[in-house]
Each structure stands twice: as C-alpha cells, then as structure tokens.
Image 1: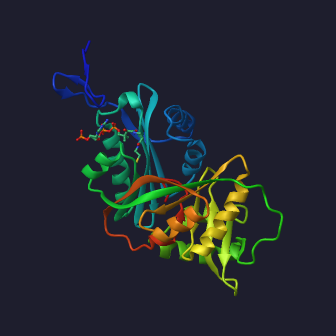
Image 2: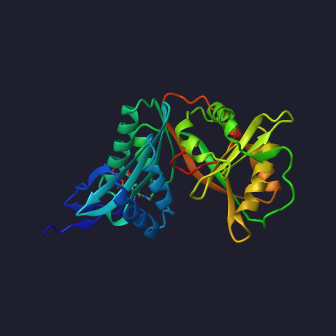
Image 3: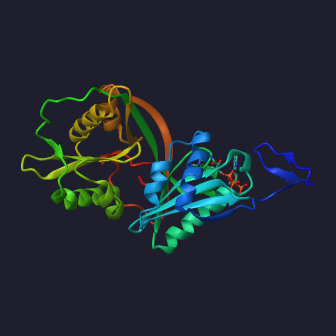
Length: 299
Ligand SMILES: CC(C)(COP(=O)(O)OP(=O)(O)OC[C@H]1O[C@@H](n2cnc3c(N)ncnc32)[C@H](O)[C@@H]1OP(=O)(O)O)[C@@H](O)C(=O)NCCC(=O)NCCS
C-alpha cells in the first residue's frame, strides 16, 4: 500500500514526488453525458447536461472525458470556429486535482483543435485554470465582466420597430456580423442555434440586420450589437423572456467602459468574471460589440 501524504494543493505524494494521474483521456460518448454532467453539478461547476448533449451532435465540437476505474473524473471541450478554437469546460474532480490531469485534458483539447487547423486558441480562464493555460502559452487578452438583472413579466405590447424576430433570410447577415465582430467563423454552431424561436435581430430603418440576440437551449446567449442602443433594446427583451423568477445575464469585456456604464445605469449588477486568454495568432475582433456569450466554451 502506498502511504501518501497530502500536499498543500491536494497532490498525493510519495516522498517529494507527486503521483501522476493514471486516468485515460478519451472522447465523450452519449452515455457519458449524464454522469459527466452529474459530476460537474455535484461540484458546483454549473448545469452542463443540455450543452454536452448538444455538443456531441456538433461536427465542429470535440468533447473529452477523463476516466478512471470506470468513473468519469474530468471533462474538456474544443470548439473549432474556422481557424479560431475555443477551449472550454476544463474540469477535474476535486479529489483528483494536482496530479497533472487538468493539464493533460487541456493539452488534448489544444492538440485536437490544432489538428483541425486552428491557429488561434481562446478561452475564458478561472483562477484555478489560469496556471495551466499560462504554462501552455496562453496570454491574457481581456477581463470578462458579468452582468445580471431580475427578469420581468412578458410584455404583450407590439415590439419596438427596431427589433424583430429572426427570419431565415437573415442568416447570412447574422453570420457576417458575427464574423466581423468576433473574428471567428461560428457559422456551423450558429446555423443550428439561430432560429426564429431563439433569436431576435436589431434592424435599421431599411430592415437590414445590425445586431442579434440568440438564446442557447441552455442558459446563456450570443448578443452581438455594435450599437449600444440596439444591445440595450435586445437585453430588455431578454429580460422579459426569462420571467420574473429568473435572472437575465450579459457579458462584456472590462475595457468596454461604455457598455458597463450603460448596463449599470439600466440597473444591471456588475461582477468580475474570468480572464479571456489567447494562444497563437492574434485575433482581428471588435470586442466592444460583444454583449453576451453562448457559454464559456463557445464565446
Ligand atoms: C483547473 C483544474 C482543471 C486543474 O486541474 P488539475 O488536475 O488540478 O491540474 P494539474 O494537476 O494539471 O495542474 C496544472 C497546474 O496547475 C497548478 N495547480 C494545480 N492545482 C493547483 C492549486 N490547487 N493551487 C495552485 N496551483 C495549482 C500547478 O501550477 C500545475 O502546474 P505544474 O505542472 O507546474 O504543477 C481543476 O482545478 C478544476 O477542475 N477546477 C475547477 C474548474 C475550473 O475552474 N476549471 C477551469 C475553467 S477555465
């Protein structure tokens, strides 16, 4: 029997040598989604089952799990948006941490994204994840700021004429706007997520799309709007769609002082979020037009 001692950050040690995790990192299967989501739920890392189920159907998303003795003890996802890849949901069960597994899952996701042609990799780091990403060559890009506000009852009055539900002929304009603002090609994931039921667009007087809000089947939503007035109008609508018992959310970069000021003035509560980090080629993006994320694994 190995008599191990606990190091400060949870490594099991033998003498001064840390025992490395022997878990296997492999692609997630449909049968893994529920146990993986249960692990994250138990450890307070959010409700991910709907996201995992959806991600497994997506040709541009790879989902990985770490398995030991038949149990899922870790997760990670890589979403390729053209040549920009997102690393997300990097998680290791708390009693298995500090043995190199988080780094190994992260490396697996990065290698997979690179093999699929990604030249830039992005993620939103938590304080626990940041040391791994620094070691893997990621550098800080921007701090995220999260906003929340209580929902409102539905409003039966006609919509503001500058907002209307998305219609299928708008898709090209939505995708072009999204590409211009994010610097990523999210066409594959957005084509499935942007529907008349999930999405509203902000339009100019001639009816051309100049912003959009797409709710995800899980919590969260992409909100892209170069004009802050459009963003605020779309967020008001989002607030009404959550119902009074729930909260609406938004997310902007910390340097977007205009957005932060406008949201605070409209009664939204501000809270610092993770750090957006980047590895590889620089990103040609317009962060001031980003007001909401589908989730931390997709931007
Ligand atoms: C982030 C997380 C996946 C790391 O998993 P892990 O298996 O402990 O990671 P590793 O053992 O590979 O550690 C990698 C590095 O992190 C650092 N590290 C690990 N545990 C640490 C701790 N408790 N405190 C400080 N640093 C720590 C070390 O610097 C280590 O680098 P090293 O190679 O120099 O030793 C894990 O802490 C976790 O699941 N956290 C909760 C979810 C989360 O925040 N995920 C990140 C989202 S962006």
